[in-house]
Amino acid sequence: MLVSGMSGNEAYCLHQVGYRPGELVVGNSVCSLGLLGGIGAFGRNLAGGEVENVTSLISEGRHAAIQRMEKEAQKHGANGVTSVSSELRTLSGYTEFLSQGSSVHADRGSDIPFFSTASSGMELYCHLDAGYVPMRFAMGNVAYALGLGQGLIGSLRTMGRGEVKEFSAIYNRVRHLALQRLRKEAAKLGANAVVDVKTRILPYGPGAMELLMTGTASHHPAFSSGPVTADEVRTSELTGEELWNLAAMGFAPVQLCMATSVYSLGIVGGIGTMFQGMARGELPELTSLIYSARENCVNLLRHEAERFGADQVIGNRLMIRELSPGLIEVMSIGTAVKRMEGITPRTPSLIPQAIIFDRDGIEADTMTRGEPNLAANALQNANRARSQVQGCLPAVIMLGVVGVTSCMGIAGALLGHH
Figure 1 (cartoon, helix red, strand yellow):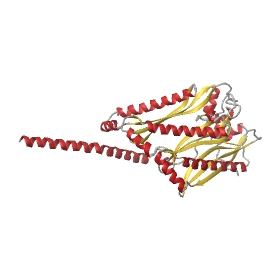
Figure 2 (cartoon, helix red, strand yellow):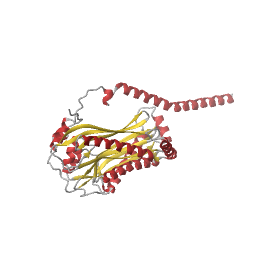
Figure 3 (spheres, one colour):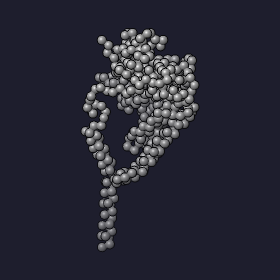
Figure 4 (cartoon, one colour):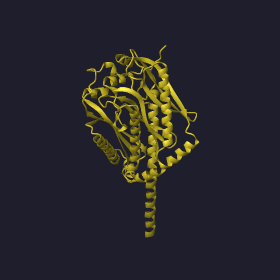
């Protein structure tokens, strides 16, 4: 009895290109950082930057899990694995790396060697029709820490309003390093492109984070006839149907572009905003700060795309998060594209099944579906209100001290007068 994770739309799309669903396949690896590795990681955390032994451990664990998943698929006689994922979990104080996907079989034999891909069956159909031949699931990662020294410098800089360049440099360096490792792995596999790139930031132990980039190392005959260097590997986070539509318009991805800006409200702006927050209305300091951060981030992205010789950047997304009170990070990410000859898809139009969004047939309450939850929102709002009250306490105390001091001064003056 076959048990597959594919939807009906995925099965239909793959049937159009000569594949059928296979078994669910899984691979895992449980690892320990070890005592000496932990001591080394702690020392590196103090210095800041990449924690190399943690990066190596995570990379080795993830690759071991992926290889075991692929071997399991090959034991079933599969020709490939779709919807590959790479997860990291904590198990009894150790780290478990888990990889899983859905295997596929060729109906009439296939001239494509065994492959693994991060894309779904629908996306795989789009990739194949647009000329992207899948090779292997690829990844690039960096485990990093802010560091005590760089943290202190950045903390001092946060007293002034504007960009905290020490923090911006760290985040930009880490993200581009992970992307470069993804491209390097793809080049070793003989690929000239990485499609459906996904970026995640994951916590790993105290004071350390992992930036993980995954995608499908692929080969497109219009990009090169053979292997290329890591710097020549093209990357894109666009969906399969977006890549197909681009090809139909004569465009191809050049490179995934990223930019990060970390901005501080500053101690002076913070005090001013705190007082303004007591009254209803717009907070000009915060409005101006966030606007400037976004503008700076988009300009950095634009300059990077220009260096790649791209015509435009599409699919750009601006993400903002609060790193700490008064300190925000803005990230801009998009795919630089360029007009190119010889990339027209094989078919004149996409089949409807390739663009239909699969509906989740499992009904669950709002707590598990990620939809708004009144209880959670109420708790969040209560915590936010409590934080605002606590944030105002210093100002209230300061006003009280000033008031008492003034009263004492007035009383002293009156007594002296009498």
